[in-house]
Image 1: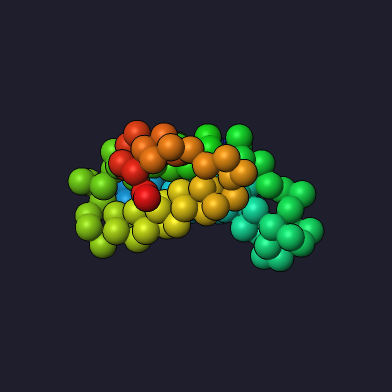
Image 2: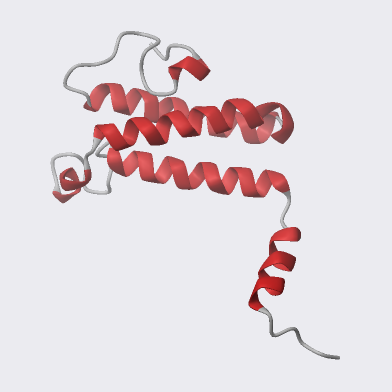
Length: 119
């Protein structure tokens, strides 16, 4: 019984054991978390120390990437997973709109080319 000492082989074997839906949802959660912080939704809110993390340009990129991932993967990951991801995405899109001093026109917000207008 020999143990592999090749970390690459171990990592490959570990990732091979993970279902695609888990990889997709994990990536989506990372994008959501990063976008939330960049929208000023850190634990202490936009008026606390978390305000230093507010960066709407970065948030826009993250939300657009999330919208593309959720929209493209929804048919394959099933309604149960897609619904919760869509809900989180919509919340972020609305938070972005609220944090923006000059909100985008309906349909022009981050990710709205994939999801449609959120207002």
